[in-house]
Image (cartoon, rainbow, N blue to C red; front, side, top):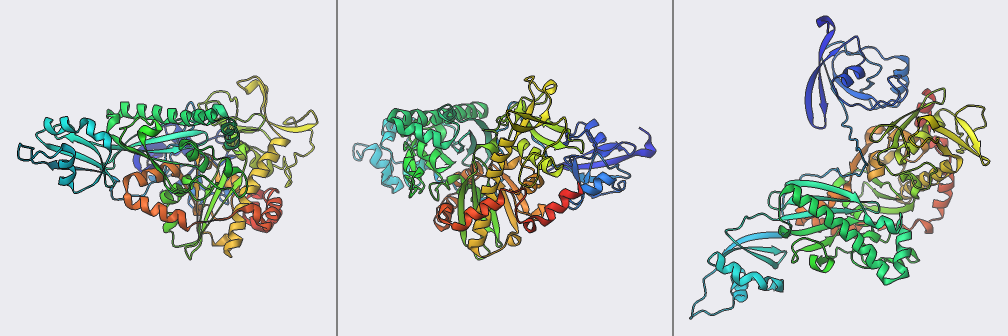
Length: 622
């Protein structure tokens, strides 16, 4: 490299900082890729996709190209397209960390606020006066008297006498709240653990924590074994209702999933499963009901009453969860039949309840849950049936976010698609995030009109099959299956209905609160689908409101992070109960305005163009 054209570039990413040498004759993207730094790039450096944007902190860079100038209306301030810019001096940039799964994308990361470690599980060392002929008090009574407690798990009696005598009546006593649940000789290792679990309809994620230090010791994830009984909640409820043994099948499936994760976690961390005393589970109301042995049938019919909304705790032995059999498994409190403990956990992990401004939380999936917090501290929440299309189901070439799925798409002026495939190689289909981006670009390139209709054209990329128009994303020769990967008119309609439900639900809550969309100062996006969502594409579709990009924050798997916060802090545990009681659940079917808003929201981006004035201006610039 010529010294006169080389510069030192410091790169910040994921909380880390490192330095490389770059050549100003090459684009920044070329320099980054050459150094082994993976930056999103779908269009091969043509300046079409906008995915390779990085944030400039300091330094001198080449002037924007015409293509980059178009994107500057869309990107956050200070962002440059790395494929279009060259570094002309020593400089500093920030690159968003990109996480790519190979076999599949199960969302395990999430944001968790710092907190003081104060779990429900406590351990204390106790030195008892040994018995004698003059003091023949029973071992249990001697222990309880010394602790000044009355509550205990009777199954401690089996091991109590030996434990006391093995260590000359000096023991470590494990308690859960005020109940004695274990007695351990002092000569044994003093460590105890807890697990936070997110029970999703599709996936289950578990984190292992040291309850003394609060240290995270590992994370494991897997697909929920309940999937074989139905992809969605309704089909599983129907299955469970047919026969009591079916409900047991569902309960056993999720417990088996959790136990496998526990096995993997403890093996990798080198800890004993019988030293896990607390498991906190977050999930939607139906998933938590299945776990506790209820088929949740009455959630699905008016007046939509769930079996419980409070935080339930049950002995691990009664559920069959493979931890210390005297330990507990408990749930995060829920709000209603359709707004579950996962949303309460999202609120806790995002800090929505602590915002001193108007803010919203949107959890995107088969169901979309929206929570609105007003500046005055009022909470409103609603759930809408977005349908399975957002996660790739019910779409002709749709699939889960696993290896071979197209996860990101951009379309150029000639209607050719560029895409990224999970795990690399030829694509087999397209997952939710890819579908959203593809349809957004179809609207930008006028392949579809504002009603979502694929236009009549003689383009090679549009064809008709059985009387239905289809847009070709991947030609047959470039597909792993040897068949074209397309989006059909029916696929687009399914996405329109899903995005309309989400936007109309948000707008309805906004109107009930008596505020405007512009009052939203923060919007937290939660959930697996939401995390891989491109904000601009979602705004082009009209799924998310037309507010500045910097107001949006991704919290990842807020459900498991919120569960972890309840695991580690009894104060947060009590706070979650308080939050669940404060939130007013809105049944959208009872709000006349919702249906009319839904119809208007089926347009792309919306029938009322004033609501998306800035987004439309950006679309036209591309």
